[in-house]
Image 1 (cartoon, rainbow, N blue to C red):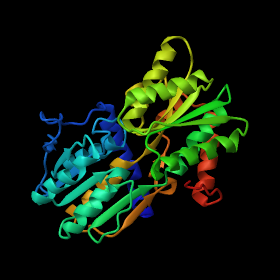
Image 2: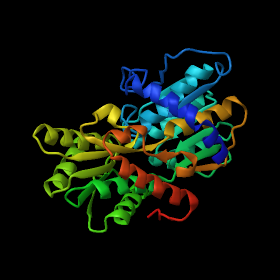
Image 3: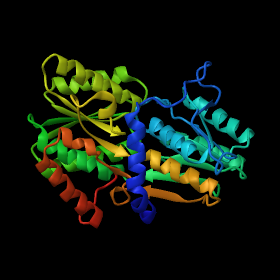
Image 4: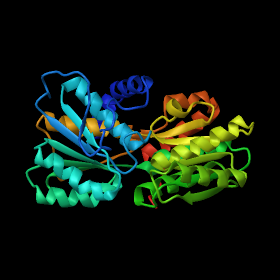
Length: 352
């Protein structure tokens, strides 16, 4: 795992930045019936993967969440461009859609079926057990099964680095964290972030607010307003599309002449929301992971029953290059120092 990521990190990062630079919306439009039918990418084809069908079921945040669902879809579109594989997504409006969407791909004999997000765990487990000859993969959860490959991330490691940035750059010593659902993956973001802040600024207070949602920007905006009103000048969100509301609140305040920052999540969110409010982002390379496992299927190397954990040492999490726009060089130097200690095992960050 470690060798693969280090040998390909530069190439895949370049590919991702090129894709992001062309806009943040994924290639296809949602189906006219609200996403109840697969939507196909329109990218070009080549011979290597053109006989392979790979389907993806989104979490309730949707494929345009500016976060992990979108990153996964971008990874599949890169796969499409490079191999000619047929890639489609089904968008879930609620958890009741998970199993029907997964089964639709099984019925159509797809070579690999993805479930994106922690909440997909039970559905993947059920459908995989009922269809042992089909291949499944999941992001952000571990599902035990001989035909399921699981990919999780050490979010706490990347979040620790954003905590270092926030702790060193806050002017009020008040910082916020807005989460979506309080589930293990989001708790890893919270714990790592608080640990990073405390490491460099023990006097700073971190206010925590869980919105219990990944798809309600209005709740994110309200949570951010409460935290900013209490004097915070930086908020880190790990809330999917709900976090878009955090950015909206920050933009409103910046327009009113108040300087506040947001730390984005999963993708480099400065590309979507701008450098005026995005201090940095905790990038989680869902696109790389989805592309990698999907390529295993095309190459005949899929390994069901395996769990991949990606952290700083694998370039699976980290800060984007655009951080240098708003984060001073001396702060980024400090970030690199802490990153090295984490990679070497000198700093151990708890998961909860």
